[in-house]
Length: 98
Image (cartoon, one colour):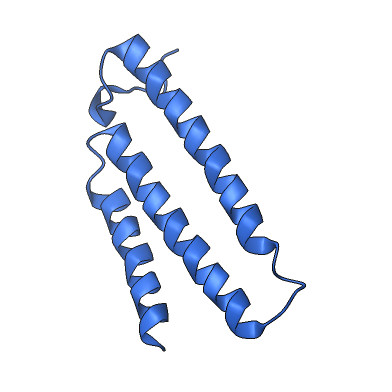
């Protein structure tokens, strides 16, 4: 494993542990998801550059587009949650209520 692969794998695992253990606020969960998607984007981009393949060159951009859609959906949910509940604390959210 090269140092670059180790760095991006470590960044992904750190984002995953942050998402797992620090779920007090919705904003922190969204930031952990963005960190994970950014590490996946950079790792996929480096992988495509190492392979010198033109067939896979669009895959990092597709991942980046899905990441942007995920970020906009997450921010919309954050705004809706802050308006209805007054806070973004995950403990105050009850999924069984409308």
